Image (cartoon, rainbow, N blue to C red; front, side, top):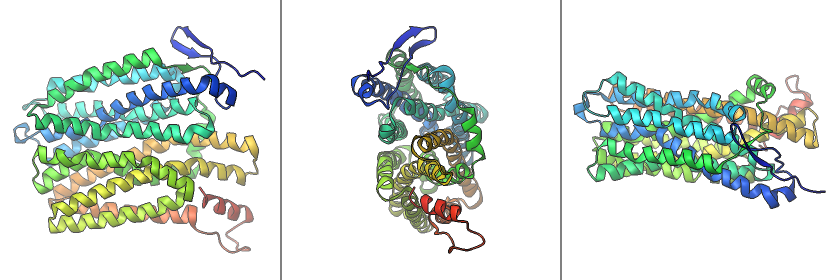
Length: 460
């Protein structure tokens, strides 16, 4: 049998691959692997810069001293709005790849990053109104959508047996954009540079990412939006349960990424340089450990790792509350970084649960073989974009909670107590839905099918 070739043609709308079958091992070895890896590399580059622009204002607020006339509450509201927009745009970005093509949308999405960056470059100076800064931060939210479109695009290039590695690398490479912009911000502050220097560094990088995407990436003709799967995913309760859990993991990661430096400044009186020295450490470690969370989930089960991860997150948060009350900067910073690491670990384990859940549902429906695999792929793929968007909204909740806590009690302690309660709820939901053993046989509340499905969920 002759393996299909990847027929790449140039027509109106860019480079299109007319035939693509990564599940064919001969095709994958001879043609597909090289093309897929090339597209992965440049997709990660664009997504990475997108994350940096999305979290740009977590650094910008460090530059905004008393001369800007903004209160801590104002600054938390600014970064909250960037988080909100970044979460919302993930939904349309998920479907944009099939509408415009992966290469074409990467060029568009990368180019759109110029708008918030140039806008911030123009207005970033004392005397600018709070409303203007707020609009610029909201524009930066478009960078949050790059994750959803990049994951959707790369998912199409790789065979099922390689998706875990490819998507993990894609997600981790994007997430690292958070500590990178904070590191560059540290270097700029350390060199006594102003915020416009930081923005001036990113403007040419955005242009380079868009140009490289145009030169080296491809569209796949066969990628289409499956509106039926999207509707089914929206109706499935597990989509919303996993969204709730992802709020606890990714929502924590992105929310704390925005807020960490500002909390250190506001609660402990750190200078911008002192804050920048430690702000990047948590997001960096949280990004690097995300693939480890997926690996542990593969080995021991995603639900089990997620369950105990929430225990760890709760414990770290309790230590933060104690450190906050005792005004211990060293203990506070250490526990906060541990919390970052655990949020990254949980990102990996919760995302690995999603395909397992829909495979278990397929088995419960009596599907087997390729039919079951196809069902699992359709539903998990459709649900991931929505779960990613809702999870990112958790970052908004975290920043608004910090804002209210500082307004009410003058510290972040109240917010951390709320987060502790939320992690307890996430633990309870994970156990009750995915790990609790079904009632004894014959119970009026548990059918044989429900019992089998519950046991299957315990292995996700």
